[in-house]
Length: 111
Image (cartoon, rainbow, N blue to C red; front, side, top):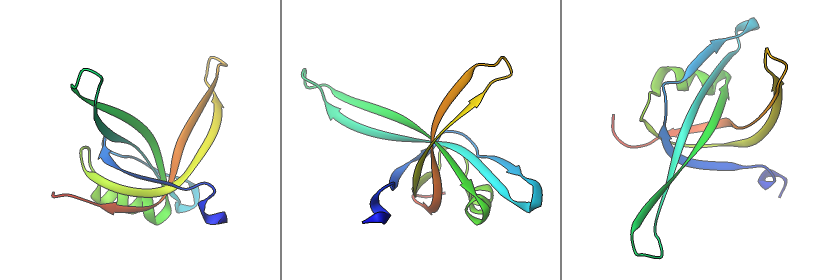
């Protein structure tokens, strides 16, 4: 059951072209956002679409796949784990972020 403790699976569309960074030692990092949509009918019977945005990071070989094949709007399935971290802005303000550390990507759809 340890493998299920922090596991995220998402199917959605890229909200932007990936941002690729080449780090020291040849390590590669890709950052992008994924939108997931859930559609339901509200109390009045109207169709409502709820969009959630997820920040995603990928490292190494996964980042290379992202760099070479993924663009804004592309539909993907991904698996990874949730990571919470904080950082300080130049103004000294502490910010918190939750992101998916992606370790597997499957391209869906056409194009």
